[in-house]
Length: 436
Image (cartoon, rainbow, N blue to C red; front, top):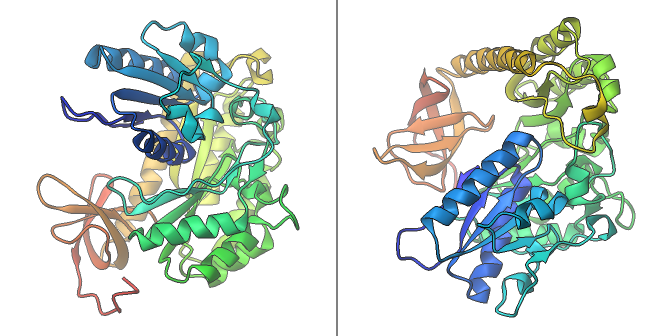
């Protein structure tokens, strides 16, 4: 969660964001609409529904926000509000409940009278509009939505019911948004969506994600860095693979939506890839770009998962050479097929998740230790209270340097690892200003 509270006495909208990178992007859209509409004394809670824990945290934050701001308007939106608006409307702390489509419309935050519950049938939405954002607060990295919704129905997932069916932002609109962000000083753009690799199937000519990225990079040559949020291993197209091999501005860090490493569990999840498919993909991508690192989403304790099945998922960390893990104990979501399958005991799920996290932490430490003595390119992002600057390397490793200016890409000699961070010294930058 990204939590932002303004100083006492200030009158600007506050946004609490839970969940994915797409939510982070949409929070910036809402911030812009609220500011333009003159909405000041309000707290907007952008919820997530991916797990029961995410919803619990959102409800807790709503109650906390009401105690901290007894006179403010509290608006609840996001996937949890879209899927179950009645639940949030029943909370006495909540003034309005807004659906995922309405939250991106400027008139939603205007002065006219609004219904207390403003949630439509998301499955009826057929298009996704581009939303121009000048920049992200305190960031030199920005998220850009290129796709929305999902046509697949994984048995554990409720997100399609919060986001609707897959729909794509036209390439020209993506280019316009990225160009504007670069003009405002953004050095790195992350393309995001619900199922990003399904991009383009609903557009004229059906351009693939890779084709869109190729055109984007060609038309915005001043963009230094491009990343892609979580991608489906089975949908990676040939143009995407060519970019990995040939385009240095596409960062060597891919996050895969794998979910499990056992074929029977993958089948029961209704995933479209196999264990072998994931392993071969990682091998093939490394052949194209040896320095690439992989992250992955993994679920521990999916219904019917045996110890042997879990062991297959645990071995996937080594077999795929995964570096960054997002691990979730399975969370039964109402109305999903998986919720009706034989459940793994909660304590077993938690224990298996802990083992996966330990394996991921070990893999990450191994990768970070291997960076010591190397020179990496770091996008310096935020200054800490002690004056040091933290940023991210090409491989998304967190790097701390003693001095520097946020918003610059600097060569850094890595000298040590401290916990899950690298530390280093900024080297003289011999590139041109435009390259930096």
